[in-house]
Amino acid sequence: MSAASSEKINWPAGKRAAAVISVIFDDGMNAVARAPDLANRNKSHSVWLYGANRGVERLCRTFQEAKVQTTWFVPGLVAHNHRTLVKSVAASGHGMESHGWGFERHDIIPRTSSLELLRRSRDAVETVSGKPVTGFRLPIGNWPDQFDAVLKEAGFLWSASLNGDDVPYLHPSSLVEIPVHLELEDRPYFQFNFMPAFPAGQSRIASYESVLSNWIAEFDAYRNFGACFFLQLRPEMTGTPGRIFLVEAFLKHIQSFDDVWIATAAEVSAWHLANNTHATDASHPLNVFAAYKREHRVVR
Amino acid sequence: MAALLPDSAKPVWPDNQQCAVALAFDLDGPTGDAMLDGSLLHNLRYFTEGAYGPWRALPRLLDLLAEHGLRATFFVPTWIVQHWAGRCERILKEGHELAYHGHRHEVFKDCSMEEQREIMGRSREIFSTRLGLTPVGFRTPSGDWSEDTASVLAEFGVIYSSSMRGDDRPYFHPHKDRTQGLVEIPARWDIDDYTALAYFEDPDFPAGLDRISDYRLVEQNWRHEFRGYYRDGLCWTTIFHPKVVAKPGRLSILSGLFRDIRDHKNVWIAHGAEIARWWISRNEAVS
Image (cartoon, rainbow over all chains, first blue to last red; front, side):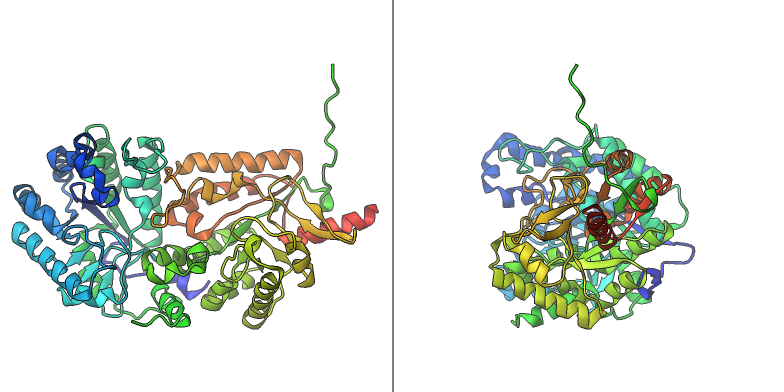
């Protein structure tokens, strides 16, 4: 067997894998960024505004009952607009992190603007939540060249934006990346709006039982492989009366194991920095990407 | 009452085995359209979604194949061989077949005959220098091939293709001088993991962003597929991609499928090349 498949990451004593439960609270900004016309359509826009209205509270009640600390990604503008709500989420013990300022695309704005918006977002979320913000999730657009260094300069320690693995890894700047996967998000399964169409093909809404079953299959495998499971929920999609059972059942399942470290992303990042700082090998996705760019002499 | 259509050409397999299974995986990684049009150079997130295949998914898949004692064929763009040579060596070392799948997953239909020769030449060189082998199989990357492709493949010593969809057993491609052409080991969308499980955004797949299927139902479908081919004594191959089907939770689908295959007696588990050679030898014997 190769070194790679037997390579195990270290987790805290007694734990064989980690699980992060995260919430993306963007108050419809992602949808509006993709379909700007949405902002002028009260009915359609309200599909997403349901999150701030009801979904956030429902998710928080569920987390509280399950005694689970979660990780929230909030655009600075949303922290600003929903000050009281975000404050109370933070007060109930959840980690509040940055999801940019206002769904800007960092790949098409100058580095100085990126830096300014990242700092502004961090400040806003910190001020409202009253807790330090160390993490970031890319809102929209591509990951710019050497963006890890920009994030470090803006005061971030970790990101949950890329794929490429299912255990944390380090960027050249030592920014920790905690990889995320689309099949562990609720949006691909549940997003729906008639006009503008979300998703583009107006696909049938997935079976709730099937989503639960898929997530459990994934979690069980992550546990088996010693990986870092990273669930991504949205208040307007799973914080609903009909779907909240899914979150409850899923949390009950993962809490039935005592060998899985259920942690916030900030805790996973800090643990990784302190215990798994090994350099990645040449065939790690980040290094192959660097080689790929060298082949094409893409240097900025 | 009308006569039933007879099953005209039920294949014969070595040692009178009931059916042939050529498990096949396309190890595309980040190659493909976005690499071909250059947009991938500015899309690290999408690159990492593809790179997950050779980097993280493949070793677990190889472990699972070994656990079930199964041998498979891997169609590998040679850009992957260049960047993940160690991973590809392991494929070879564990008794699997490696075969052609373009260099960067080129669209052969859109390439001139000369461009196709260039791609094949480059691939042959990389397979030879990095892994010390010369493949004899080919699967068309990204869609269709052109009318020149079969001739180009013959120039490179390729004896079989697994690219077409229109049959459920091997057949010979027609050759222009009426001699026996390439063996085709046809596959079908029905057992392509993209149709049930692949989901990417920016660029989107599927185009309308349809939902990811229920894993257990996908497993059921694929087991029905295998059982149908087994019952009728045919040749079953798959279009699986490690970055799609060997994600952690989805390995449970393959695990169930592999167990089902192993629970059937007289299944000839073979490389594409072995099936092609058998088909050629049978045909010579018959004629």
